[in-house]
Length: 284
Image (tube, rainbow, N blue to C red; front, side, top):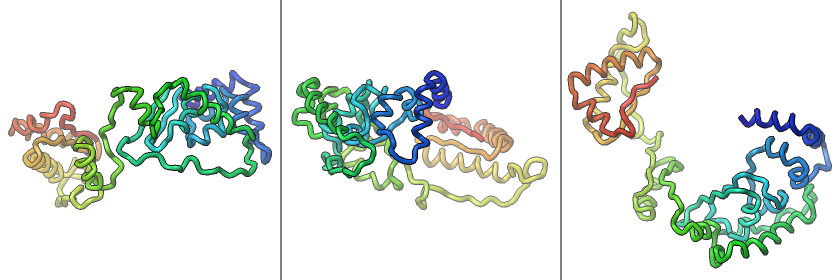
């Protein structure tokens, strides 16, 4: 989709395309990014539709105009409102993501950057000064006493913000357990680690004939899977379950064996499918 759009934009803007081709062949004396984005806006944003940078880089590298459809702040609890405003002014929509229970903003983004000539206009930082001076007047008291842009946006939305409740970053579920219990009131959905001793089990199955006497879908392996499904339903009736088969033929044999098990014990099927949102499945 992005490639198709780029081709259409390049065809529709041949002059911009030529200037960009000329720029990428330069060895020295590169044109500042802010000037390229001002002179070649369609081609630049189609070639690079997603930009990632710190708030201070936004003021130094990008022209002061509404260039992007969406601006996203991650770790917004670490970004001061004054640092965020220049980036906000360059987008049509805004998403602010962060955790109010984290530490307040650090001085990371206020460190002095290298003053060597890197192709940036000398007046590149003037935008940030102007934006910081004028934008708070538009935003009223939203940023007053707000230590981060996250706090300011939460104040503006007045309780309409959304919580993200799925935590997936800990390699071991126990790493987040204390925070989940003491800070988040056990509201987070966490995931068991895949490399802990109790996360995975290996069941060795003796050799047995498979389809047409070969090794594809051995009979004892099919039987062992059915037994494992029964054991799971008995030990963890409130948990969902899925079976992944190595190949469509193996899947078909598993489904036949499981259907026989369901007919023999109807409660097994009912137990496995009591969670309508996550029903039991067999897939290849």
